[in-house]
Image 1 (cartoon, rainbow, N blue to C red):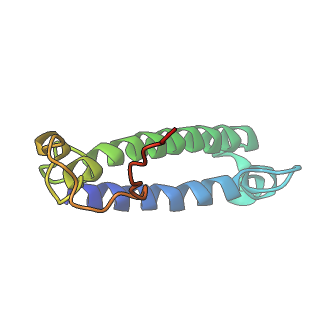
Image 2 (cartoon, one colour; image 1 turned 180 degrees about the vertical axis):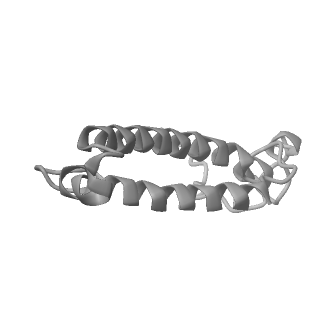
Amino acid sequence: MLYAIIISLITLICILLIIVVLLQPGQKEGLSGGLAAGMAGGASMGARRTADLLSKTTSILAALFLGLSVLANFAIDRGDAAQSTIQQSGMGGEPIEQQDFSAPSQTESAVPQQDDFEIED
């Protein structure tokens, strides 16, 4: 449940980050270049303040994205597994620590059996 909430927040932050990055000015274009001067007579927010606001917003959203991504890694539901899946499975489905390796193998040997020959002089 917590993981789903974190993922939805990450998605929302990604969308906001895309919008804020696209609003940032390029070569004398964008919101801080031409549009800010035309809004409200240019008195409320200048081009420089808009660029600073967009820059700070980008930094904050990027930091939130990074922090939530790391937090999502720890919020993944792993169940009650104390060991990895490979350690649990082993051979025969029992943990490797509990297998008896002193018993002879049930499979045939890959090396063919050779008869003992005696060399006579």
